[in-house]
Length: 321
Image (cartoon, rainbow, N blue to C red; front, side):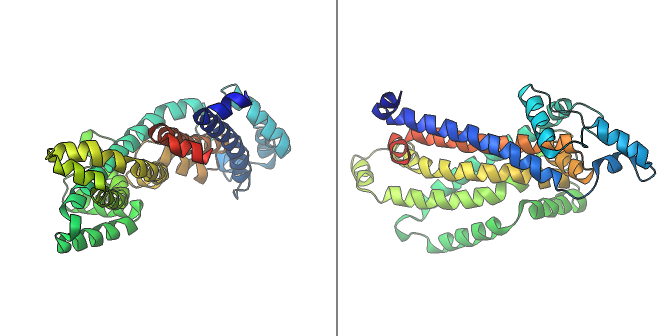
């Protein structure tokens, strides 16, 4: 097996990345379990209310298994996890898997659309500005672009969400300010999630475009009088994609985290708003499942980006193995 991996560096790269993904996932499960247990407050008290008697609290604590040691609770949790049982929400009295099945599609719709918009805006804007400002052309446009994107990058997603909600929802009344109610309800959440990362990524695309345009093979392509469309699609875009995909994967991780606050601002019926409510109510089973879900999504995105980079540029796989 070792000889096979050494003869095929790409296979060794994929094997190592797969192993790292599995180990990271297991570590995340254990750490998230421990972190949730140190959150101040009593989940049983939060569920039963301030009028509950000590006996009622003791009985409910035993029913939920919270009277056992942390190691015993962890072992029980891992057993249930590997059998697909995520537990029952303490506050909603509903299987956690049902809650996730209801809320996750809404989050995936929002995050996927925001990611597509981010990539399209970033690649299009970066390529156009790179071509427009190549060889020192249009310095004022370059300065304006740099200033505008620099400002947009510094604005947190939830701040932009509140501003958009106030301007277009409250003052102008053009868009719905909360909840999922038709395609127009996607506009402001997607804009809040995609504009800052698109601004950051477009700057990288522009720099990579300028670098590609200054290389010798581009002069050769121009000397052959190839159409500009072919030059950019066949020669510039592939060279831009490697760095763009790397940063795009990182931005997608941030985008997943950003959905938590943006969904809360717009009362979006997704995972983000659900986890905020679960933390407020000390709902251990629901928090554990949602943290595990979000963490798994982040790890999976990083894993897919590594695999794609290895496929696009096999040399990187050999160097990083």
